[in-house]
View 1: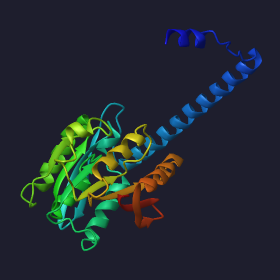
View 2: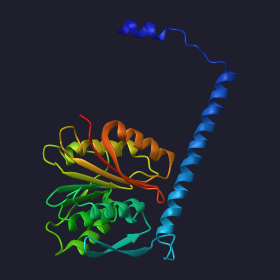
View 3: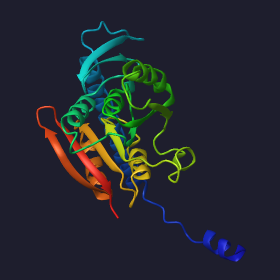
View 4: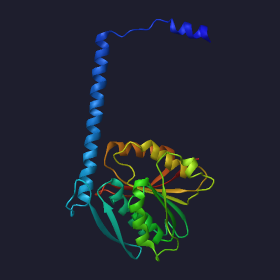
Amino acid sequence: MLMERSSALSQPVRQKPPGKKREEDDKKEVEEEGTAIKALTDQRVMTKEALSRRNIWEPSVYYARGNESFHFAGHDISIRESMDTYGALIWPGATALCQFLENNQQQVNLMDKAVLEIGAGTGLVSIVASLLGAWVTATDLPDILSNLTFNLLRNTRGRCRYTPQVAALSWGKDLDRDFPYASYHYDFVLAADVVYHHDCLEELLKTMRHFCRPGSQTTLLWANKIRFQSDLRFTECFKSHFNATLLTELPQQEIRIYKATAKE
């Protein structure tokens, strides 16, 4: 082994001409700058959309709260939002998925079904699923859970067959430890506007695949507004891993709702 290593070390190293190396460095720098500018532009798009969601507020640089009211499944629903994080806002994919679930109960029957929502945010989708008779577990990042729990409790207490549960879930992390497949099986996994400007798309897909495995008969319902080219790239990757059907499309809102099961 030592002789092999010495032999490898003794091999001549091809040096790139200084001019060519400088050219490659410049090209790499331009590419990195372009990526940074694109990320900043996407971030601004999301921020503008977030502000427009709550344009009746007087936004604070630090913190602001507001309430949105809805009527689904025969109940008035009041959702507390905040501007401190994207996860504490109601996005159009969530309201579209709620409308679909309410209007297509024969096609998607949630009564007495075990349902998991990933990226639950304010909890609107989980609340509607609970009102439609599902046993729901709503998940999101730890810093989202306080507002999520508040919304769930005040909108489902005394109204639902099952009390919805809340759990922390960071996409792609410790899934086998925190949600071992043998113990956690769901009839439906719900996801609304989980694809946007963030760096966790691979982890999101890994999470979807963890809960929707071949042979599991778990159905994934995913609603999303298409905002960026990365959304379309994720959709193509999503279709390569799942048997996906486009249930409905809302062209004016640029929202698509997919039904999917794992490929065998």
